[in-house]
Length: 105
Image 1 (cartoon, rainbow, N blue to C red):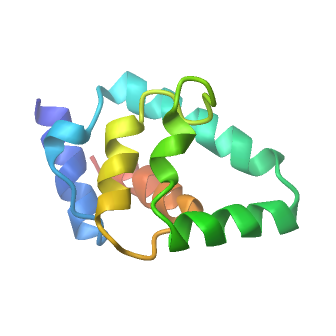
Image 2 (image 1 turned 90 degrees about the vertical axis):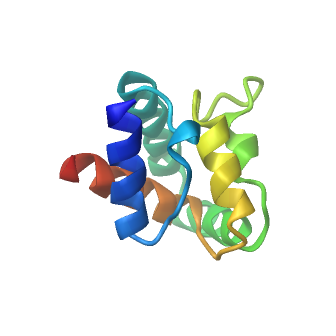
Image 3 (image 1 turned 90 degrees about the horizontal axis):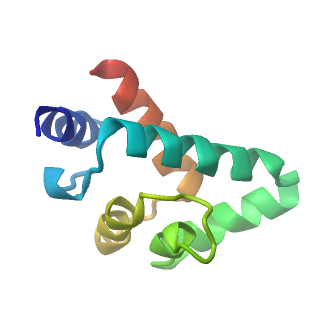
């Protein structure tokens, strides 16, 4: 569980405090982040802005990992933990901080 603890600590240092138990394996995390990034990058600017606004204002981020949606596969527990923080974290912000955390470990 060393990766999960290191990643959770890196996220905490970036302002997102989650338990290491919600972090998937490094491969699953990277695949989920890549899929999420691909989806976000496929959106036009207006739609991406709306997705960020909705995910910042409402606890709906976990829905992106739902298997029927399959936008962020394997990230359900991490996105639920982000939803539970009651913070204004958009999905783009979470993606950016996760990628930064990955680069730091």
